[in-house]
Amino acid sequence: MPTGTWGEWASDHALRSAISLCLALPLKMRLWLMGGLVSRIVAPLAGYEARAMQNLAHVWPEMSHTERRRLARRVADNAGRTMIENYDVLGLRDRMRDAPVTGPGLPAMEEAREAGRPILFVTGHYGNFEAPRAALVARGWKIGGLYRPMSNAYFNAHYAENMHRLSGPVFEQGRRGTMGLMRHIRGGGMGVLLFDLYSGKGVPIEFMGRPAPTLTSAAEIALKTDALMVPFFGIRQPDGVSFEAHFDAPIPPGDPVEMMRAATRALEARIEADPAQWFWIHRRWKPERQARRQRKRAAANTAP
Image (cartoon, rainbow, N blue to C red; front, side, top):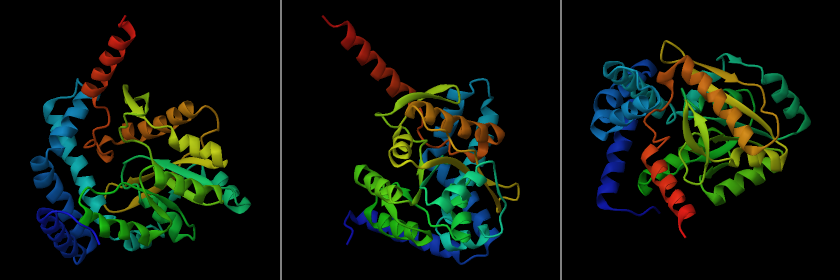
């Protein structure tokens, strides 16, 4: 039984009510409502819009303030649509049953599946990152993954339950969950990892022209389990509702940092094609924190 504060309990019940209400609406209306709610109300009030604009200024300082705001609102609209879509994972699975599945990685994926070789899919917070997994599940594939737990224990309880509904096993992010996913993959299973979140333990890798600390765990898992490492992306289409599930060519095994650079380049190509589909609301770079760490390292190296 989850525990928390009275405020967290009330917040959870309010969110559950809003989600239930939205899920009762027709699909297009549901997505339009959640996209508008998040982009026009939630993102400005919660600071997500300002954070997205700061990230855009960090990467593209030449972009005008007006253009950054317009793009930040499109980002929040996609985030709102993605959130409510992923609360109807079985509906998303059914929608993805006839969606186009494309990309140069498909032949290698089929070959690995027939041979019983594990596959590790890697992606970022782009479009709807659950859409390609849903497309494969709809076609008979079984794919596990990691999820990032919510800070509100009440909300996390049904959020985690929902994550398991599409396909399992699903593990909570962290050392224990990563080991569980590794065991699953080592046994010939398939899994998904999202690699585009900041980690102080990560290796600085250039992302959109700026250093971004990036964990190499995805590459290390692929190497330790001899898994095929395939970048994939759920690309939202102009109608705001449908998707293309795109699978890039597998990343060749080698140095883990170089493998993560290749995965990062694959994500960069998608962002450059349509920047509004990436979640600029995440604190991906944290330049101030990186600068402080560099100053501390420099001071430690020069100390007598």
